[in-house]
Length: 86
Image 1 (tube, rainbow, N blue to C red):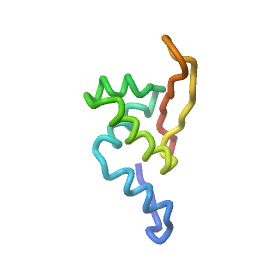
Image 2 (cartoon, helix red, strand yellow):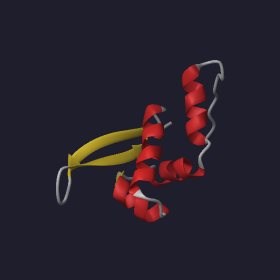
Image 3 (cartoon, rainbow, N blue to C red):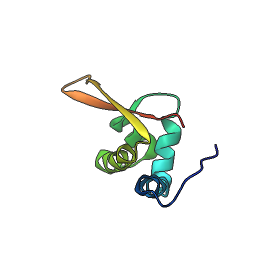
């Protein structure tokens, strides 16, 4: 995948910052073809759900992922994550 970025724009800087992290790159790779929730990502990547949530927030702010909320299996809502197509 080839991306052209103008570093003068603030959004581009935010995207580059988000992509610096190997963990966030892994989240994007895992969610490229399917929706996953924070718990699933936590189990696959072997990090706490809180840590995954922080990474997801950064990716969401950079507009690199899509979020949808669905009723959880046991209670409340779960946040489902999928990488945006570039």
